[in-house]
Image 1: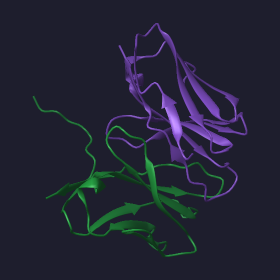
Image 2: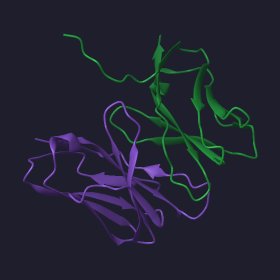
Image 3: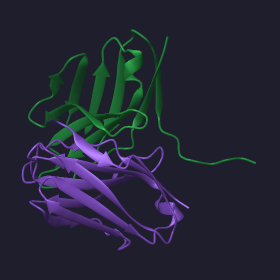
Length: 115
Length: 111
């Protein structure tokens, strides 16, 4: 199994809603990532978890709250989002973060629209 | 009125021709380089990688060339097919550094 699975594929939410994005991998990877991608732009790193601990937070607003319940799962909790947060949210995993040549495996993303 | 926005660099090639996608990077400490392909509505997909101790690496129909002197790498796709149409990102990485994507190039293949 070389897949990173993200749910839901599409999400529409209001600015007062609370929702969660989910990501799952069964490759035994110990590093997991959240990226945000606006249209016609490259993915931008948001968070990195290494061995279930948050290791990088790229100064992301607190209305985005990541969670790594175990080594296979990664969640992104959303609350009080703004319309400019509408984007494709990508989850990725890699074996670990310690070495240079670690390639990331990406899911298909959740297309989020904030109304 | 006039609309202003950012546009991805686009490369248009005829089916069967070879494609060359270029990427310049700025961090001389970068020692690992990945090329990703992203099709519409999908996440980035790994294509090929190269370490800084190499200047060329070949895969199936793809070749990556690395020139560390001028901090440039390229992705060559042989016999381009319609299924190659996508946005291609290079991602240089320095030791213990984060993976950061380049701006991307849209490849359009026409019959």
